[in-house]
Image (cartoon, rainbow, N blue to C red):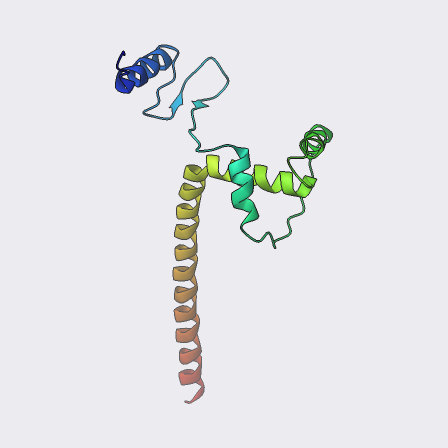
Length: 143
């Protein structure tokens, strides 16, 4: 029986992709498309994600307007029986999209945290300024 060397197979796949302009080490490449092509590895399929989503409560309501094409695609997913409703399908695809873009969202979250810190420093400074002005007025009024 021939021994299978998975390392060599994986390296061969990586080399082929690199020749096509896809570098798995960076996650992006400059392919012949308008923007960077991202290679994303996700475990399991949609059914696994749907099962996982079913184990959590969906108690937050988000109103979303979509175009006719998107609406039809959601309806098609419902027609397959994979989803009970457009809402369930949309929730799963939103969840999956957020997972795909988790890195970017983490960067934005970090940036927003910096903005919140700056706002808090500004509020503290404003209180100091107004408190010192109020003290000055009180001292001036006592004379």
